[in-house]
View 1 (cartoon, rainbow, N blue to C red):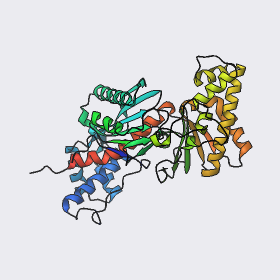
View 2: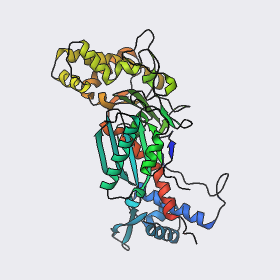
View 3: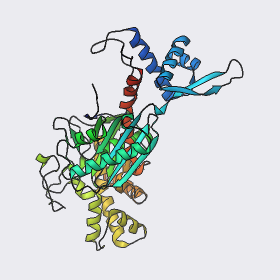
View 4: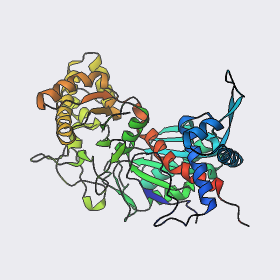
Length: 428
């Protein structure tokens, strides 16, 4: 059955794909073809993680016989999944042919859908980005945003010189929480109308691929853990502070999303005794709002920095980025606005440290790009509030954290899909 135009939810960080058991509940019965398929997948993953390798090295590393390795490699070459990568001439013995995976065997799409910008990346199976688009989000309706995403993705695929069918899987990062039953995103107040059912089905139909939907902070955590400052940590937190506030948590390589996919939605917490800092409020029944009252997000987001700066006498037009720029120049109102942001974020960090006890917290999002101004004062603010002292790091991926997390997640789904498609027996 075709998977084009289907949307799914994701609840885990990219993990090494385990070899399926040869038999058992829910598995096809054992047969020789299935054994060959498992051998081919085993060798392909070995090449991906450790290649280029020779036949002898593959036989030694996997425990398979050299004839079995030779037969499997021939199948992988014929399927376009592996290729020769050169030759190795040892001091003694015969020259050995080296093999590697062919990254052009399939491609994935990563999407980062934010209030301010839309980002798209096409990557091959090695994770190399071969085309991308980065554009302002000018959509005045949810449908317009969805259509702009599809148009940008199609342009990027065309720029990469690929037909649309070459994309094996797409992962879309968005504010909020995916609701599989309603087929929509909940709690995405920063994107008005984004909670309406059918939007991601519209994107999937426009792209003709399976689309997996994931929270942006979670994908940023996956990206930073896979490629950036979170690599190798036991319990890592990515704190996304920009148009909203959220966090992604990775423990021992596994993304923690909670029972309903809403773990890390710290910004939705309403503060007691405080009127809303914005002039609008929406009901949670729409799936796009949080009710009345000031939320934690409203006190630390980029809009909060601007409101604080305006209250201190700075003049419009003003953005959080401009406030931080002027703080670097020593403008008193801007310096004070940053100090107040540090004070509020210090409280958030203390709560995160007490709840999760992470070894690393990465500061990301739009506000995170000013880590040069924030990290040292944030460390001091945290130490004043808590005896728990995780290491604070700036994001290494910057504005690409969500996008690269989407690519990494798409690759984990695409690699086995491409393998199955290219090695499937020809009917007849």
